[in-house]
Image 1 (cartoon, helix red, strand yellow):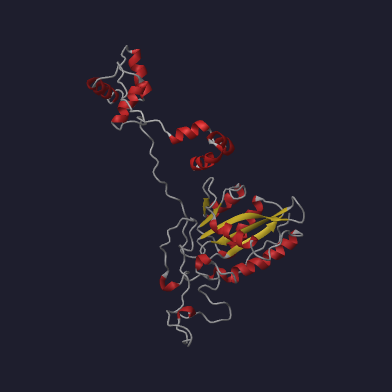
Image 2 (cartoon, helix red, strand yellow):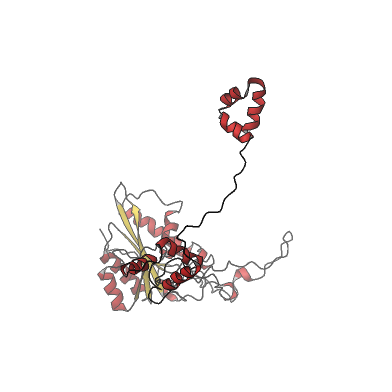
Amino acid sequence: MINPAVDGLAEHVGTAAACALLGRSRASHYRAKNPPPPRPRTPRPAPANKLSAAERAHVLAVLTSQRFADKSVAQVWATLLDEGTYLCSMSTMHRILREHDMAGERRRQASHPPRTRPELVATAPGQVWSWDITKLKGPERGVYYDLYVVLDIFSRFVVGWTIAAREDAEIAKNLLEHAMGIHGVPEAIHADRGTSMTSKPVAQLLVDLGVARSHSRPHVSNDNPYSEAAFKTLKYAPVFPERFGSLADAGAFAEQFFAYYNHEHRHCGIGLHTPPASTSAPPGRSAPSARPPWTRPTPPVPSASATADPRRPSCPRPPGSTSPHRRPSYRPPDGICLTRLDTFRRAGTIRLPGVEP
C-alpha cells in the first residue's frame, strides 16, 4: 500500500523526497517496483559419505534387532562404538527410523487406564450423610466461628448442626453422636480430609458404630458437593450478614436459616421439592394422593392454549450420589424425584446446648 502513495507524491516532489517524507527506504521502494528474478533452486548435492540403500537397510536391521529393539539411538550408537563398530551418526539413525515411522520412544511405556471415580449412592434417606465445617466472620478481623453441618445427601435434610468458636474433633464427635442418636445410624458418612474429619475421636466413633468412612480424594475440590452447596446457599442468601456480633448471634441466625433450609427451601437436585414435604405430608394434614397435585388435570383457562399437564422438573442425577459426575440418565417413576421418606424427619435440627468455646 505504501508504493502507490510514494509514486503519487513522487510526481510532485521526486522519489527521494517522497520516500523521506513517508519514511520509506528508497532501496526498498525500488526493489519492490523491480523485484529481482527468482533464482532456480538447485538440488542439494549428496554428501560423499551418504549411505547406500543396502547400508541403510543394514542400519535399520541393527536398530530393530532383538538386542537393540528397546534401546534408544544414543544407547545403540555408544554400544556399537565401544565394540569397534561405526555404522553412521546418531542423526542418520534418527532419520532412518523417521523414514520408516519408527521414531519416538523405543522403551516400554507405562499405560494409564482411566480410573473409576469412587462414589456413594443413596437410594433412600438415612443411608449416606455428608458433613463439613465452614468459617463465619466474627465481630472483628481475625475472629471466626466454626459452623458444623451434617446433612442427608438423599433428601438434603440437615440432620445436625452446631457453632463453636474453634474447630475441634470432640465437638465433631459429639455432633455426629447426637445426630445418630436421634436420626439413626447411617451406612456411610462422607467428608473431606480436614483435621476434624480424619481425627481419631471421629474415626473411632464411626468404627464402633459400624459406619463406613468416606473421604474426598486428595487435591480434588468437588468430591463433597452437597455440603459445599449448602454452604453456598447459606452465604449467598440476601440476609446473610457481613459479620456476626457474637457466637450467640451466629447461633440464632443459623437456627432460623436451617429451619428455612429444611422446610421451605426448594432444592434443584430433588426436583424443586423441600426435604420434609417432598413425599410425606406435614403434621396435621392428610397424606398426598397417589397422584401428585401438579400432575392432576386443572380446569381449562380460556386464554391458555392446550398444553400437557404441568410436571416437576426431573432430577439431573440420582438424588443421593457424592460424585458430581454422575450420568444424567436417572428419571424416577411418575415424575417423583424422591421415594417415600422414612420417619427420621420427625425430629428437627440439632443444636448442641453444651458446646461452648
